[in-house]
Length: 114
Image (cartoon, rainbow, N blue to C red; front, side, top):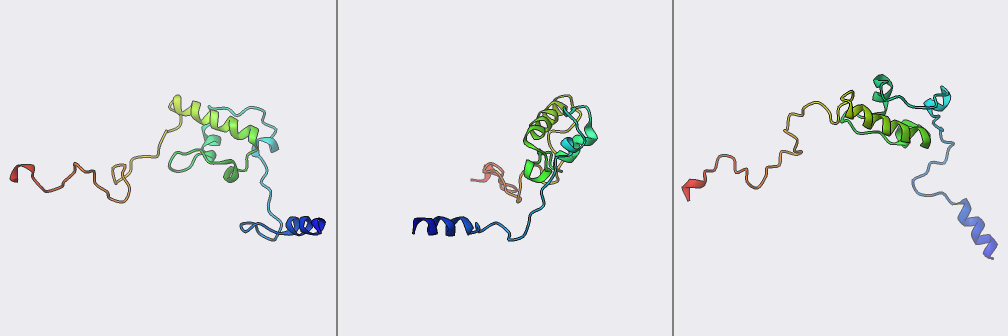
């Protein structure tokens, strides 16, 4: 009886998984046999940084754990040396999302009228 339960549980799929075979991403650095990620190679590092300037995760980049750690370190060094930006170029909203106003920003109201 206990053996039947364990077999049934192991054959079940989790809700977020697909039934078909999945595509395994291969690490670019392992394929090219690159031992160390160079922070000066900006064109290569830009593949691992989003449009907003965030470092992309392993799940998205397909890099192995070892090289993803090196990529993150290289991106941080390149930012410090001003080779890569910390954030994206200027935004039109002034940094705040959704058009929200601060409490002190009353717009056209004047405080002297009270």
